[in-house]
Image (cartoon, rainbow, N blue to C red; front, side, top):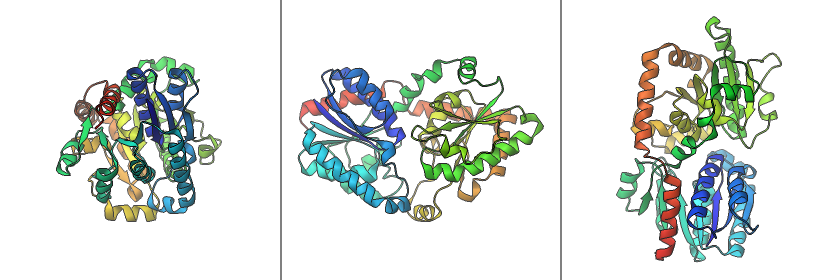
Length: 391
């Protein structure tokens, strides 16, 4: 069969790559054309013998977040939508598979449905958090919804939307990662790092997130490093896949030798850190699954944040906290996300063993709620069954 997959962000690239593994396992003759990133391209190159299909556009060309940012880049977004529509019509897939990225993907869902293509939506748009009006579009334009969080089941049941739930693919992505298998010593040697304790810092994957979080993270690292008990710690910044060293270096000084930026090492940095400061997103849930104590910090565009406060209806911004419906780890947002607050919380994580253990106990509950392994393969199999049934 012919598959057209659209992932618009780094997290979508991760889930898309695992989904592609499952599709190729269930349908060895699959022809896949996709919008995504390096991970999806790697699977395509490894599993598809001919060159039919392949990467159309890399997500770094169009990743946009926030209401204001979408308005600023509206022309670019609309141009990509137009290009995508034409490409789908030319490719003539058996199914269009949309992965999260709702601002773009709902436009494609409507187009594909009206053109008679089967439409699957994988990683449900977060209509339970905001913009519930999109439920009408899910019902109208999506043939089957594939969800990945247990708390979504009662929600979509209440809305009368049919779905398939096979667990969360991030469990496989973490448990099967190279980082999970690598020893701490091997990680340090491979990256020419000293044998000193690590604190992970994740500033986000988009330029806007990095520009707001890096000044805070830099000052946080400086304040921690000045404390005698943390003077030998190293602070590792996980460079986002679509970014370059310039995106981070402009926020650091020549004397910041205890702060290092590593690319392609996000999972390894998280796993081998004593604690992590994480920009909210998929990385926060990865941090849970790697069992690394964390604090979440997020600073968005001020106007975007004011708009979001009016329409977002969830108690927490982190998926792990949403899953167990309480604060397993703290979230500092906007003005509350400042160096002093981060220092105080990270010290608590490192110095208060009971506090640290309580978080790890909550992590175990989050992991349990996400289900076991094999989610990506199970979803791929379910998708093929849906296609074969002709529903």
